[in-house]
Length: 146
Image (tube, rainbow, N blue to C red; front, side, top):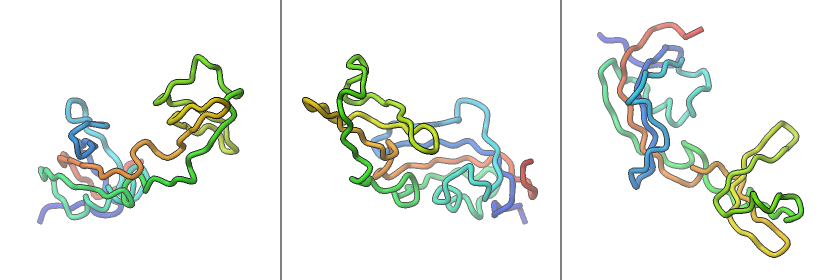
């Protein structure tokens, strides 16, 4: 029997993440495959769980719902920030800016500009979206990558 992907195995694969409209978010099909250990936290659990049981040579496409991918969009993560905190040159809807928080930096997307306030969305840009996850399994090893 061929070795199957399970927790603790090392997996080398080509992958792509895309939106349902076909927009590719990330892909390594044109480059070198990625290697990781299942369960090491490098992949979100919703993506890892779809790989379990696959074998070398398998090619699959999965639709990963938001709750198993980048989370649902949370309106509490949309904040209004005083416009005086910004350099006016940076203020453009869709711009991604880095904000300091207690643990370091947090990216936020400007979604609206008002006279005295800037509305910033701190949700992951892919939150609330189904992700099309394509994989091609290149290699499986029974031991973790160190």
